[in-house]
Amino acid sequence: MKRREFVRLIATGAVVGAASTAWTLETESTGPFVRGWVVSDGKPLANAIVSNGRQLTRTDAAGHYSLPTGPDAGRFLFVCCPRGHWTNDFYRSIDEAVRTGKADFALQSVSQSDRFDFVFAADLSNLGNASQEIGRKKTKASIAEICNLSPKPAFLWIQGDLGLRGDDGKRFLDCLKTATIPIRVGIGNHEIMPSEPNPKAVYERLFGPTYYSFDWGPVHFVVLDGNKPAAHIRGNSLGTVEPRELAWLEADLAAQPAGKPIIVGVHIPIVSTYADRRSDLKETEGPFWQSANRSKVTTLLARYGVRLVLQGHVHENERTTQDGVEYVESVSLCGRWWKSGAGFERATDDSPRGYRIVSVDGHQIRHRYQSSCESRVDRQGEFMKLPKTVRRNNKTSFVFNCYDAPNGSKASARLDDGPWHEMRSVILHDSGMKKPHHWRWTTDTTSLAAGRHAIEARVIWPDGTTVREASSFRVGEPPRDGQSREKP
View 1 (cartoon, rainbow, N blue to C red):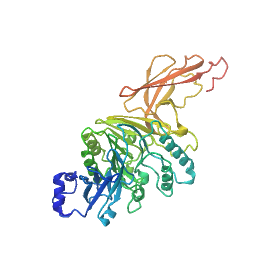
View 2: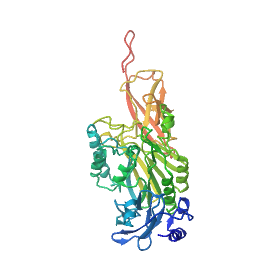
View 3: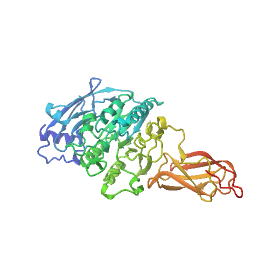
View 4: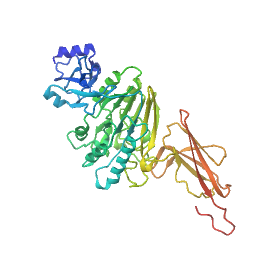
């Protein structure tokens, strides 16, 4: 395609977001152009968005498109599956497209309601080693559980730390084969191979572009990369949405109709208090726990009315809202890296391992954390390490973990049917980290009568949701004169 045709495409809006990228009208050479055709059920699909990893264009009435593939483009061309259409074969290598001069996409029509659920999961980790056989079994069990939820999820979204080193990739693909619902996948830091010429080559060979978008029902979904390879970082990656990806993100968001619900997923959090709550982090690690250019990203997401950002990486639940956008760290599927063996597996915030169920009803979006399989519980929180027998003491401490309480929640507790008392956020000394949804209440139990007592926690979320969970403990008979004190 000649330069004057590229100018025409920009002038007519066929190339979306071109003015905000390095593609300018003054550029004499934009590199080779690739033409393609998008069809669904064999018929031309008009107005479908196709991207070169930086710019977007829409197909014409005949399903045709054209995009430049110069140095500012990414490594893939990909189609954003529009509502009512789907394919797992949604990308093409730009190198291959340049060799052949074309990149066609064939979609299929699928029924998509305004009302549906999907599941977001992250951090499977370490599935390849022989010692991780239990982890593989638990992963397959969780995938089976997810696929059999009622209502059946529209798709499963796995966002990073798949574990692709060595045989881990084969093991991960083996787990995916057991799924009976569509799957979309995103990259995490454990998919980065910093010593390779292309540190993301293993992921790209298996799954294609590391960032892309798609529609399902009334919602637009954005899968971000957010990893900058860095060999000096223990996790092999810095949290950064790099310039090309950021330019594509702005073009993609700008292409959506005003008011359309948008949900974004990323592995390394964009917004998190995790690093601030850690007492053992070294500055030399760099921005490994959240995105280094988060202010640019959060400004962009707020400008285009993104509703929800789903995040992984830190193996905990944390929920916070910034500029009207809710950012959710979602608990790891592997808990603490499958360290419990066949037993009950907890994540780093002491919540049982699990995933997140997101429910869409038109423009309404709700979500909830769900514990999984052998670690499944019906409660929404628990008193941590509550002994069966409590010693009488003028400073007895009770710690409550409300598994998915958003930041800004308020907690209180009471004994039996007594008055409510404020609980305070607590630093647990086993990790040196302040957990986002743990609270402590210290009270005088010296006057408690012998026998069983109830303790109840009440957590009120910023939106007014109230969680109440109760447990019990026993107080022994007080020691008689000359006798040793009771043992717990």
